Image (cartoon, rainbow, N blue to C red):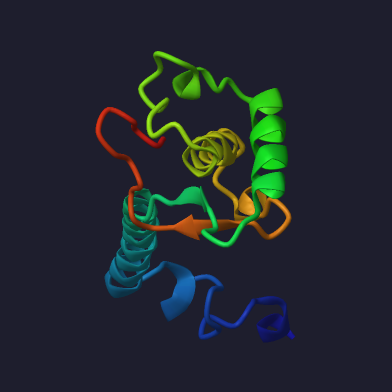
Length: 137
C-alpha cells in the first residue's frame, strides 16, 4: 500500500519529472516570441506614422455643398489660416478654402475616414496638398 500514497515521479510537472522546470530552449523560444511581438508593434506604429493622410474637397463638389462644409468645419475648429492675411488665404476661392477647413476638421478629429465624408464631397488623400506657405496639418 505504501506505493499508492506517493505521487509518481515520472509525470511531467510533478516532483522530479522532466517537466518540473522549464528548459533553457523553451525559455529562449518564449523570449524570442515576445521580442518579435514587441518588434511588430513598434514597426507597425512607425509605418502608421509614415501613412499620414489629408482630407480635401472633391473636384466635383458643388459650391453650395462646399459653403456648407466650410461653415460647419469652421464652427468646430479655428479657421484663422484661411482668413485674410493667413497663410492659406490665397488662392482666394471657395474650393481652396473649403479644402483647408475640411482638412483642419479631419485632423482635429483623429484623421478617421468618417471625419472626411462631408456628404460625400471630400476625399482622403495620401499626398500632402500643402502649397507655398499654406501647410495642411
